[in-house]
Length: 323
Length: 259
Ligand SMILES: Nc1ncnc2c1ncn2[C@@H]1O[C@H](COP(=O)(O)OP(=O)(O)OP(=O)(O)O)[C@@H](O)[C@H]1O
Ligand SMILES: [Mg+2]
Image (cartoon, rainbow over all chains, first blue to last red; front, top):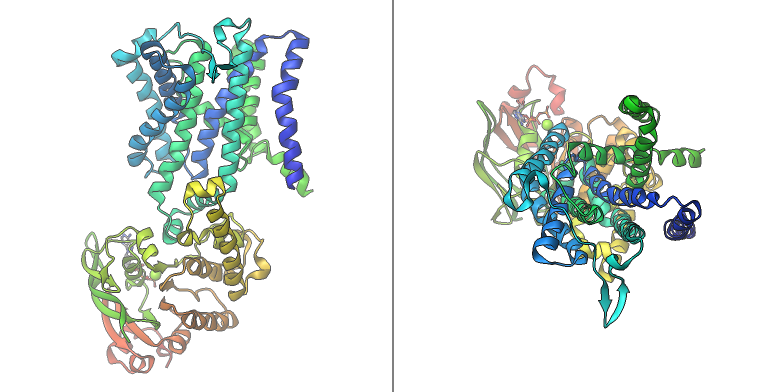
């Protein structure tokens, strides 16, 4: 794709999420969509992290753990230490980076199914920890998290106090979508820079990568750290949007879904996780009408999709371009 | 001529099996030294020990007087000792050119963050890597294939690409494990000429190879390994006349060591 077409694509996308969607919602009066789309945006940030670990050749089913950690860090910082919501976004991310370094050092040595399994267990361990630790409030979780305050710079209010807004859901939508755009822009840059190539070399052959002088241990930690940062950011905003966090806020199912989002969108495409999250989230909700058959139809559709489109939804465009 | 590598009493045991047994020899600067021996003799293991992919059970390897055994492979590579693989090991889903570009890793002056932010240093690096990659590709006669996915290359070119990846790291010592395997006569001839040109570029080349005519033609010196032990060392002429070598290869055809 030429640079021009990329720029146009970006402009269209920004226009769609910041202008067209809010306008459509206003016209149709479906205000509930704000919450749905906020969730999609936040979940796609966490999925982008999982995609990053796929990029170095690891199947990561531990993202639920980091989203949960991020959610608790934000909730605790806000309710117990009075930290501003805006600060808790990067702080939750950084907490998860630190955790991912400690956890990643031993487990990133594992590959394939073994890494996948251990990371899945990590999600469950984190849930159990949040049940057991005194600071996380056990099964009752942490509730009544206050809405975000204002952001002012030199006395000018840039973002109003959410509590003063008529509909804070709209404001949350803008926050989530902005974070999503930032996250994917950073990922795009990363993948298309030399770092992306080095990660790719790791995915293809770790032995060969180390023979050309790549410190593979170091690089795996960087990728896992980025992934966990995104998980933490996603979780922290989620906690504040829902004003609560429970041990069940992010579970094994979420970890699996983050991974499926990546598969569905396409592992070869940076924007795959975004499309995958949107499709899965809406697909699941649409099937709600089918009642007890929801899971059955959903799973069957997933299997069929993966058989027909093993390289994800975005590979559709690729095939067409190749003719 | 001084020694660039000193291999001293190198031993590697895998459980009860001694794959490399008390091997000692020197590698001189800018020579082409071949390691030969029957299948399973321990040649690849020896190369992995030298390039620090394996840690020796006993003994050590010194590079320019400094012990490199026991370091991580990427550190040995940074110091200048780089191996290629016996199997055609390449980055399959990258283009030929990207394979070479990414292998310039050790030459980068910019940090990873620098590459992310696209700093001036990073952009200069990227330009330099591109130019150097094109130079390596034309050196290996791969220029025409530069945009091709590596996995689509024919076998002979894959070997060349593997060597190109090694070259991109700008090594002082390059260890080639069976670079001529699976090549026909013509391809081998070209590859031999290419290895000679590596030396002209200032590299020291270590070679494991089963193609005896090629080995005899190309090598300054040869080390012969059998059952993990060094049984002979010398010029091609000396090796061809060596009793123990002939004995080790008995059962195989005589011409298999080029006589
Ligand atoms: N990682 C390992 N674990 C256990 N045994 C090994 C390992 N690597 C090699 N060996 C054994 O060590 C011996 C030497 O193997 P090596 O690959 O070094 O032989 P080689 O001389 O390169 O053979 P070839 O000419 O077939 O490539 C063999 O018996 C092999 O089975
Ligand atoms: Mg071998």
